Amino acid sequence: MSESISITDNRTGKTFEVPIKDGGISSEQWQKYLPGIWFYDPGLTTTAMTESAITYLDGDAGVLRYRGYPIEQLAESSTYLEVAYLLIKGELPNKDQYSAWVDDITHHTFIHENVRKRFIEGFHYDAHPMGMLVSAVAALSTFYSDAKDIFDPASREKQIVRLIAKMPTLAAAAHRFSMGMPFVYPDNELTFPANFLSMMWKVAEPHYKANPALVRAVDVLFILHADHEQNCSTTAMRTVGSALADPYSSAAAACAALYGPRHGGANEAVVRMLTDIGSIDNVQGFITSVKEGKTRLQGFGHRVYKNYDPRAKIIKAAADDVFAVTGRNPLLDIALKLEEVALNDEYFVSRRLYPNVDFYSGLIYQAMGFPVDMFPVLFAIPRISGWLAHWLELLNHEGKIVRPRQLYVGPEERKYLSMDQR
Image (cartoon, rainbow, N blue to C red; front, side):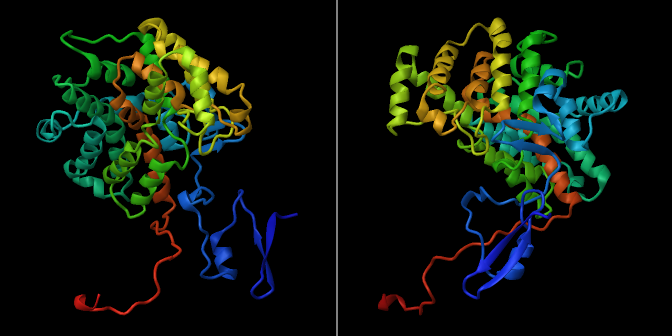
């Protein structure tokens, strides 16, 4: 028996059947029988704008998979660059493919001197690093004229490698400039996450040697943030990409979406909330104020997840390894108590509010020395691989330019009156 739904138009009495495929119904079928009738869906929360084979997400069950691989297995056994290859290419690489991929990215980490000297260093001294990153990513399109050749597979591959490779360099440059510190060039002898930490924290030593536990923690965090289906920034990437913009311009739009506090600023909001709570003794009072609608519980609940975010479980487990090196973040005890109280309170349980990835990630980044205004930048570095995977998928499917409909609620036709008659 085929899956379908039957709809009756009460204006005409006609009934029509619409088939269900992959959990959705085609808008073409809907318009065939109901022309000119649009879905009103603010935030596109129940509208599938595309088909995608990249990330599977079951929010009710708390499941996240990249190309079919459970996020738990990738976080335990993989590296970020291997996951980036998986997202872009569709399959995990063999040994030779992985070696060539890593080598290619490693040797594209440098940025043009004019990007740094004339562009990044042209910002005001207290510019936000995420604002600098948005602008710098957009500026790269002017340095690589071949980026416009988006239907040339060789050119696309080159831009993908460049973007993945240069994001940590741009991010570290933005941070160091905002702190008044000199730029640190990439070190091609280091792994991807170790090189990023070197560009962030190196002072005068010939070679920066990051603690292996911190290097692995960054790698895991990058894996967890690499993609997350059709979120706000990915939709921005696809929307701009649908106009056939180059990948740098599309990625800049995605970065701009991530700059918003509702998206990339969520883990910063968690840290600020925990700081405001101040003590375990204040947790119960804070929970009461949340239930009374006086404040919000940051880092709990998710637009998609109605279960414990699987990424949050992984990060929570990784926190111990980080704190063993950095010392225990004093906010962690408040976070653990807050989670304990909330998950045993019917108010939150009945609403299916569980910790999400932002609840613990900010604590780890803060313990490693990253300032809170770097949090959205740290989000953007790994998410570029997911954005690019969606950009490629869009081009390969030759999708239409994004052009949503609207329900007009303004005035009817009016006659123009001269200014002295108004």
